[in-house]
Structures are given as C-alpha cells and as structure tokens.
Amino acid sequence: MNTVLTRANSLFAFSLSVMAALTFGCFITTAFKERTVPVSIAVSRVMLKNVEDFTGPGERSDLGIITFDISADILYNKCNTFIFDWNVKQLFLYLSAEYSTKNNVLNQVVLWDKIILRGDNPKLLLKDMKSKYFFFDDGNGLKGNRNVTLTLSWNVVPNAGILPLVTGAGHVSVPFPDSYKTAKSY
Image (cartoon, rainbow, N blue to C red; front, side, top):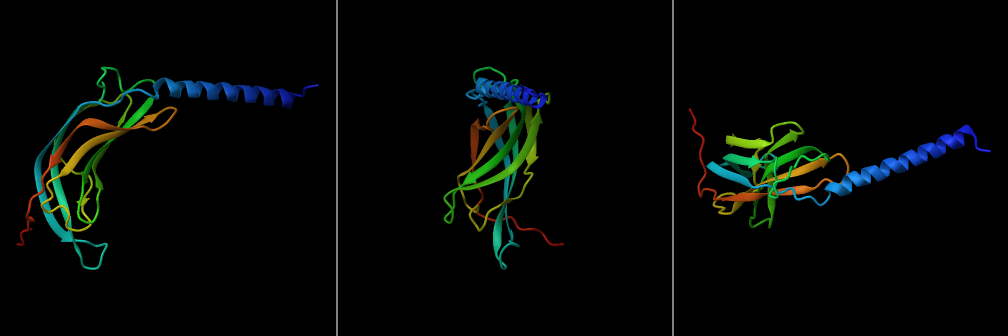
C-alpha cells in the first residue's frame, strides 16, 4: 500500500521534473539568439595625470581622464528583433578600455557601467559623460599610448540559463597625450 508520504513524495518529484523541463525549454528557446547591436562611441576629451600610487612604496602611476559620448539602441539587434525577450530580466552594460603596455600584453579597465531593467528606456544617448571609475595604469603605460580601445559590452541576465557576454558592434581607439597635465597650486 502507498502511504500519504509516498504519494506526496511522488507528486513532489513529478512536479519538480516538470518544472525542470519547463526551465530548460525556457533556456533553449533563447540560448542561441543574436544580441549584438550597433554602438557609437565618441571621445571628446582625453587628459593624463601622473599621480602618486598608494599601493606601492612611493611610486607614481598614470591616471587617465576621459569624457565620452555613447549612442546605442539596445532594444533591437541587427536582425531587428527585441533584445528584451521573455527570458531577459535585465542588462548590465559597461564601457571598458583595452590597451597593451611593455609590462602587460592586455590591460582591461572598466570605466563606466549601468543596469537596464525590463521596462526601462533601453536607448542610450549619453553626452559628455565622465568615467564612473578611475582609469589607473599600474605604471606609466598610458603616456603616449596610441591604441587605447573603448568598447561597450553587456551581460544579459536571463530568467533561466547561461549569462551571455555580448560586445557591441562598434568601438573607438583613443590616442593618449605624450605629456602630463600638471595641477596648478594656489
């Protein structure tokens, strides 16, 4: 004879199996979707300072200060379909700078980020934005660097499934100055 606990266990196991199958179906319907959109990034001002590095003993490091514009319509991708489908909760956008120095082949620094929730306005039209985070180099690798590339990327946070990393279709390379800006003392 089956007891009440045995029947409850069978019902719970069956319900859990059905929910797992539905969650997998939710994931598989949007797993291979194209999520790249065209992005326009423009830099209006680049400044370079040599500041004291508090992580080392009396050393100085480069601090880059960038003012930029971003224009992107995150709502539609290149195939003219919605980025925010029924399996997307939010997007985590971030602007990163990539460059190489003598010490490191690849340096990546996040300069700015934003979270776009479902229902928010997904059109980015940002003018004269300053970096949200400091742009430090662990030495003097920014001075005279001619190939600092700014790229807008985002993580798609789904209801179920993997967390894809998407890079926007568009980037800009910024040359940094050969001299430091000095602070005025009064």
